[in-house]
Image (tube, rainbow, N blue to C red):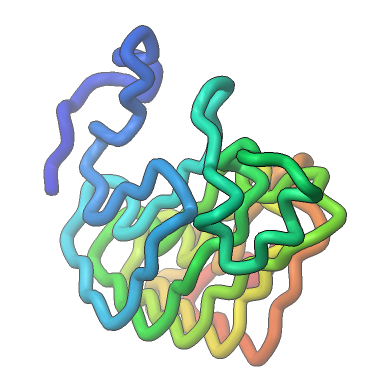
Length: 176
């Protein structure tokens, strides 16, 4: 995927941030992503963008309805990912990204497991503004002959992350 070639915020007025060349763009957490391969993406192979000032997720559709605390609906950014496992990314800028996901939450947990990313130019997994997420059995391999970038990158808004049996190779920094 080559993308539009325009800056990230060039389509902000229509809330379209998924135009930079992503293999899989998920605008919410209510999907199961299992057994996919995404290759040769200008930006991310897989990207979860779970932020919206308006979109709500019906409590009846939650895997654990108690997370709604009696409400009929909750903001999409407060819903754990339904299932992300057995996915592969290669030859992309980043392998997997999560944005504005479970930040400042006290309940719920997302799990991304059995994920492999290789030959990425920036990072294997990038998790800005993400909380309460476990990365389990994840392998990220950059350029072993010329390490650069970060295997698992984040920003200051990222919190409560768990790295369980992860492997990093070919990056300047393993986990930031």
